[in-house]
Length: 247
Image (cartoon, rainbow, N blue to C red):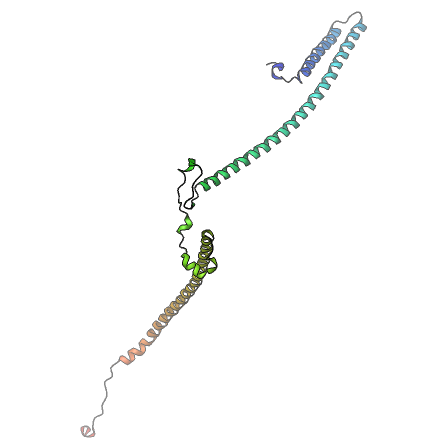
């Protein structure tokens, strides 16, 4: 494949043409030199002038080629800089796109959570549009409704300052009251648990003491066996004969 088919940049085509012309003129110069060496002419000055003329022409083309080469190098540097700036811009846009994707996923999760959120609609509330009538019902259940809260009457008797509170504030106060009561119960449970652990440790120590006492009793019984055997022996009483019998 020819070089002209590989390199298609308009800025490099003049350099390629100058390079080709320089190569052709250099071959002509070499041919003149070889001709002058192989076939010396009757007028060597004329041949030498032709060589000098061709040499100056080659030097002129080389100077043009160096200028084009320097211009091509500067263009390459400029292209690299522009490419680096474009790459940075692409990286910035890619990062921004990734952030948008992350935000989209986050918002989608929030929207899904809101759509699946159970809530209560007060009685008598009516939607302005019938478009969403099939999606909403008069009453929805919520997880806080299943909490074992203190009855309203009992709570108001304990906290009369909430007698004039609305339903929302009263529910929040009852939930806070339940939370405080559960914290107290948890504290009492922790204290009972500590007492239980102390009793378990004390029972364990007493068991160890009883086990040690059993071992001491066994050793005492083993040591008392010889004495018991002595007391178990049967002794025959010895009686003295009377004086008459001795006679």
